[in-house]
Amino acid sequence: MTTTSAGAVEAPRTTRPTRVRWKIFLLLLLLVTINYVDRGSISVALPLIKEEFGLSPEATGLLLSAFFWTYALMQIPGGWLIDRIQPRKVVTGSCVGWGLATGLTAGATGFGSLVTLRALLGVAEAPVMPAGGKLNALWMPWRERGRGAVILDAGAPLGAAVGGVSIAWLIAATGGWRPAFVVAGAVTVLIGLAAWWYIRDVPREHPGINDAEAELIEAAHAEEDAMAPAGAGKGRLVDYVRFRSFWAMCLAWMGFNGVFYGLLTWGPIYLAETKGFNLATIGWSTFVIFGAGFVGEITGGFLADHLRSRGIAANRVLRPLLGSAGVLVIIALLGVRFIPDPMTAVALLSVVMFFLRWVGLMWSVPSILGGRRNAGVLGGAMNFSGNIAGIVTPMVVGLIVGATGGDYGPALLYFVGAGVLMTASVMTLDYSRRLPV
Image (cartoon, rainbow, N blue to C red; front, side, top):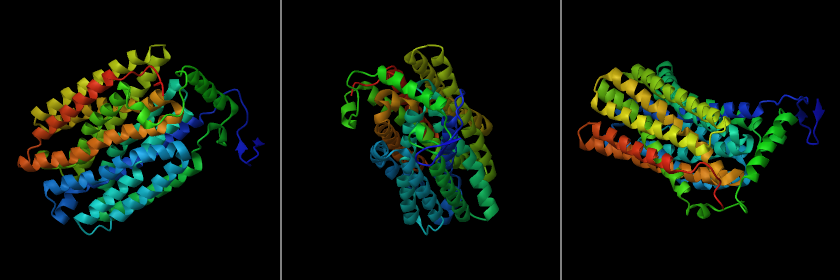
């Protein structure tokens, strides 16, 4: 063992690279999982909250969208901040902040305080995914970024799956939704402290990494930089808006989130009101549906990296992979619309989520288009666009359900439209080159 000038203990030097980068992304998977447990907890508890506060469908839609207003608005500022002070500080502060917001939700006294606390949660959670995209650029060789992207993003369906069961169990175990939120918030704060302890912004600064892994990452970054357009460097966000691929990236994520957030926010109450599911059945159905998304996301990421490792060009891998996934999402959503059987609906929604989550590969796109220096702000722009759907979708669904007397059929057709936007956009994006900014 040797000691650096900063006093950190270095790992013994061996010819076999350590795997610190994968451990960091497993920690990010846990962090994003907790993120989605917390943001989705209100949907699981919604039948109880609606009854306690007497919320109409329209008010419910507004409550579910409150998180996304502030979450979306903070994406670009958060991405800018990540590029300047680096992701470790941002991830830690964000995680601790949203844990406190989750715990404080237990003290809500009415509709107004619920909306305010959900908006606060949105502010705190906003930088996490762009920070993960930045860490993907900083830590992963470009041939591994597909897996890095989906390990990061797979926390979303895993959190939704685990959240459905865990929050339902916590509500039952603690006797109400309020103490369940306190426990969830405390766990989140602890995960934030773990992130500070283990994550580093520069691979060489990590006490667990050896020279072989550091050199592997640095060589891949040098190769990537050599392929960049002449003059590419530190660009501004406004410099990217003239490129088709920038808009394709943003619109693809908007369509993706139109489906995903629609099912995340309204899925549990849809199962309760149209299929007659009780709280326990909602929890397990949510686990199955979003668990399928977790499996699908990991499958898509590893498949993409496997094909790329065989020398197949990026566009020949990602366009067919993501385009076919989008078509299958649309077909399965139409099936949910026209087949009323409850178990068939759960099965089809599982198919939707399995293939929808392949589009989590989009978290490798900010580093493809902008390189390591601009991955944070491009990731923020992508997530901002996606979360416009997060703002609009819960309210639109609430308005549709309220106007039709509880009919969710037209809302499912809204999700089909979002799937069409996603599919067209992933087929338009050029995954092969960094933009000349």
